[in-house]
Image (cartoon, rainbow, N blue to C red; front, side, top):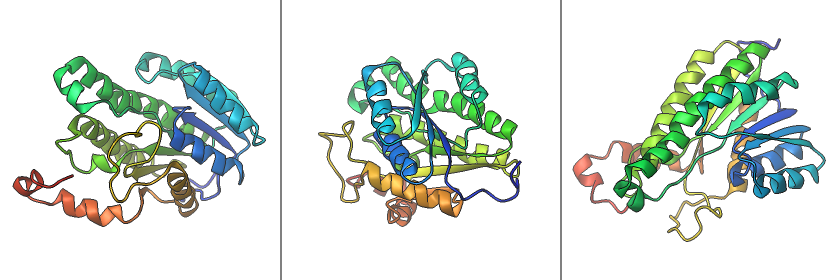
Length: 255
């Protein structure tokens, strides 16, 4: 068992990705495979995109396996993830699933809104607890959680998505505190707007980033044993200022 008092800073040999078609997750997996990672599990809904992602990582020399995983089916999480951990130790779990939703439509359709919340928050609570317990049981590991700068303060333009990420962010921080000293380290990643297929067509703010930049920041955070990282780092003071902006003024800001 590794020293439970200091988070390990070496990169993982084995990686479990929850959200196996996420562009950020795949960029991270590629970066880690190029350095040390040899075994990758991609968990997601069975589809051609998941198999294509697995094939692209196999081409880099990794042993890649896929597993059926549905964030909206928390009752299955214990069984699904249990089977993965039963195959061998997992050094790192990357919780990367989530949906943006469509604010305008979701406001008018509570069922759609609940689906966003169920995926981004409820599903993550279930998967995070199961993964955290499994990592604790083996005595070591990292849980990396993709949050968002939107978690810092809800905006009129995306408060359904933002509120779900705020819940996820608070949960991940609390889980990190609960696991402190067990040999398991939790790192929360707060990217800003990321240019992906999912965000194509949306207005890009000045500090937009890329999956590759997020992957680079994750690697650096792992090496440093960070608990929270911002991508890009310049967003941290900006979001701190917005978080403390009076509400009446905040409503008038073009954010």
